[in-house]
Amino acid sequence: MLELGRAQRIAEGAPRFRNRNEREFAGYRDAVDALMRLDAYEPLSVPFVLHLHRLVFRHAGGRGGDLKSDQNLIVSYESGRREVAFTPPAPDETEFLLGELLDRYEAAKRTELAHPVALIAALVVDFLAIHPVADGNGRIARLLTTHELLAQGYGVARYVSIEQRVFESKNAYYKSLYDSQRDWHEGEHDIWPWTSYLASVLADAYDDFERRVAAASEPAGSKQEQVRDYVLRQAPQGFRRRDIERALPGVSVGTIRLVLKELRDAGAVRPEGAGAGARWRRT
Image (cartoon, rainbow, N blue to C red; front, side, top):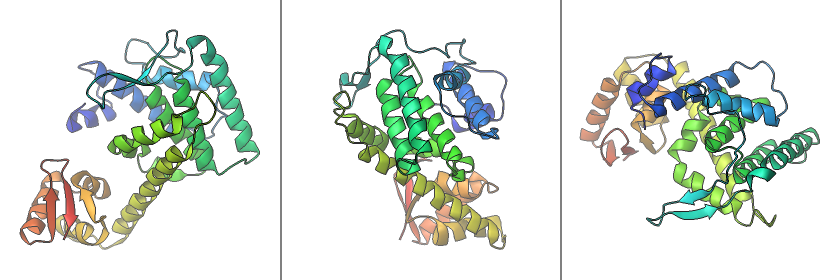
């Protein structure tokens, strides 16, 4: 896990990396930037997936750009010990299965077989079940999700990080994915747990975007007044400090802390937990 300040420096193009985590973070930054610069969205293909994989690992010794050559497993440590939660198809089946999945997905898009969000959800469930690369399957799945949301007209993915929302709800992410992959090998799995999760993430992103637009359209006032107004009038009933930081990018962390302390002392909000990740709730 990267420190916030260090992550921001790398996101802005810090040239030196301290470890493998920073190299992979920089690669993911490059892949996201590449998606955001696209003027047109090409149909998904195996070469495009491997191109994204190559970008993700471009700073990490060139380990990207190839399909898996060894069997990989999806494991869980939820019980306190290592358990195999899902066994993906064998490496010698991967290229065929991935190519067929992407072809079927593109055909379903052309014929409007289902709602775009349902199609994207089904794509991700199958992609992660195939688990086509040795490392980085989750990151590639999130990049494909962003690519397809933008391609289907969900422009909020350009302004609000879908990836961040997935990270912040990773328990729900893993549970819904596990529920949707059950009986996948038999073709009797249910995509709706994962589809519902993806739809909720997308809805939350649009709500956040609306709050940002509303905040930007109101008279400026002092920085403390902006924070106070956001907390009392615009933020969800339960929120975290980073929600305020995202909504008011021009306000310092120190000012946000000061206002939260004042509102806490006045009984307007109360913290649940401690530190930067504490959840706050309006009273």
